[in-house]
Length: 292
Image (cartoon, rainbow, N blue to C red):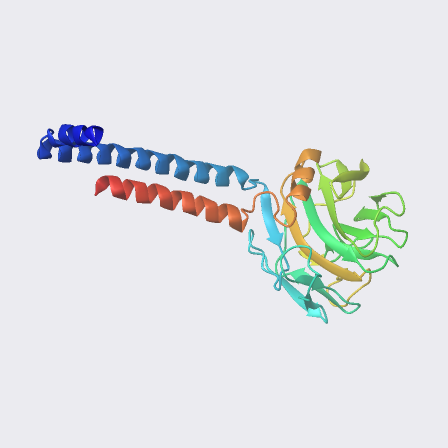
């Protein structure tokens, strides 16, 4: 009892004004500490989000085919032709909700011409329901011997084939590509050497003297297009997330794109953008509180 009384007596000996002043001082210190913590947290969120966002200035075109043919980077949108459509069935899409589904009489193609440049990379995802006949992932809209710039397709033996004008090209070993599974296929061209990657693994490489760069008629997805009639090599299955770069990506760049899944190098993913926005908002809030 004496101890309690002594404490109360000691406390009561402090002037009321001084007590309030100390309380305000402690409150000000606590507020300053919290503002600093908030600032550091906001900066950490913004920096983390920025670093987590794949960045590649060479990305020039990207078609997700998630229910539409919008080119979210280059603005060269793809349109459906014939009986091609989008399949949004449950469990079909590898990423997102929908995929491009070519048919024997339908495909997609860019609305405008597309200059690939002297070096380039094309990456896309393809799901084949069977390995039967040649099946195009992406091609110049007027390909064929002497007619067009390129064609990337799976052969009837499961090999990946890249062909330039003049019927010259490179081909991987047979059975490289399996049916009923999503695969990332990528081609790079540095002006002399072309390479084919499957799921970030190099499966074919060789010199190509034929032109691969002058896609003046644009690109077709899921089949060859010869300017009026559907030729052949249509995809039995699905296509999504096709990206074009204006440089030949390195093996590590292809691997990074494969690891990123449906988000290509250079296109910020929604979560990273949301975190980045949250970080900036946090910084703005802290500055507003300081000014108040």
